[in-house]
Length: 404
Image (tube, rainbow, N blue to C red):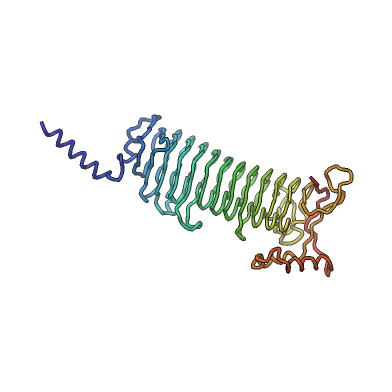
């Protein structure tokens, strides 16, 4: 009569000793009991990980379920297409860069990852050869350590046609996209990290309506073609080594309607090597930057129309004047233009030309940046313009500068 009670008591003691830290057994047990295409709604509580999903299911944590990997491996690995992960808090991944320990590792297609919190994980979401997924409304942060020792908040490798939307990345390393095509990054917020978006060999991606602030670099684009970069706000990037936008050997880049303010460099780009290797820069605002645009190489060729340059210390700088001068400048607004508009058509009566004066001193010698705007450098600049011992180089010629 008492044997069932004794067996139950023994079982209770085993379970209570095994899961004394947690209210429930490991989440993996519940996942194994959930049928294919079924819905798992765990009771609110703290569950142990790591967890692997082998067949398509839906997990709904409703913001009250914590999955803790206890410093071992990746918290949640998704290997089943058409899965849904919502409302979980995923914490405490391992520390291995070799195995890329993450909050979530995604190896499947058509998965929805939504409304999750991922913190104290080395990498945030690691997407490996996975397509047509939606990653939306998640909050992601890495380990509390120096920026270069964190993992990437989001990492895409060989992954295409994904939608990354309305996520918040705080204190991660980078958002790193490599060999990944036709993805859309819309309305994400990336702050206090190293590089907002880093694209390498990743063509036809769209980066729209994102906010990037207090990082080292905003976007770095390397060997990536046919990109649309539109309506982003990039601000407060003050590291000497960083730019809001940086491009190298990338073709047919459309940069439209962005706001770039209070950065060390607004945009840096190499001169195009052929007619296809151009950047089209239209309707952007560059405000309060040290250098708004910086070009390097032998000769220009980019299209720069209808932009606004306001209160920058230098509007344009280049490795040699030709790299800037031979760009296609037209209808840009320059706050230091000194011409008139007699016919009231909104276009200056005379072209705008920008010269290379002595104020390049703080560009060539970074240590002098501390003295930017100081009376001594202002005096040197004034004397160079007033006396003109040598003819200054023309950095750009805008034949039709906008006045409004």
